[in-house]
Every structure is written in C-alpha cells, then in structure tokens.
Image 1: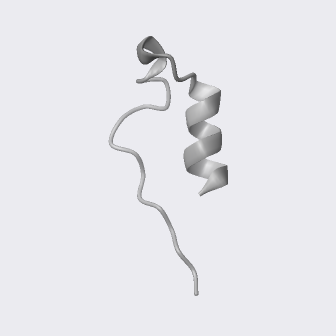
Image 2: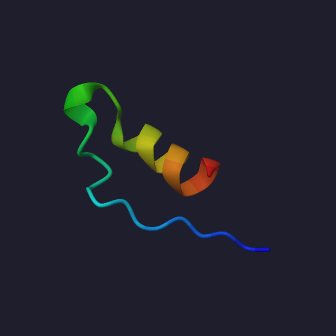
Length: 33
C-alpha cells in the first residue's frame, strides 16, 4: 500500500518567521512522513 502526501499549500520557508526553518519543514514533510 502506497501513501502520498499532498503538496503543502505554502512555501517551505513560509514558517521561518515562526521559528521553523525551511530545512526542518522539508525534512518533516518530504522525508519523515
């Protein structure tokens, strides 16, 4: 069974002002899940 996450509705760096780096979000969304 394969599962694919949908694309995020915002850029990977959109949460940088809130303390989540682009790299963290890419890892969490693209690799971890």
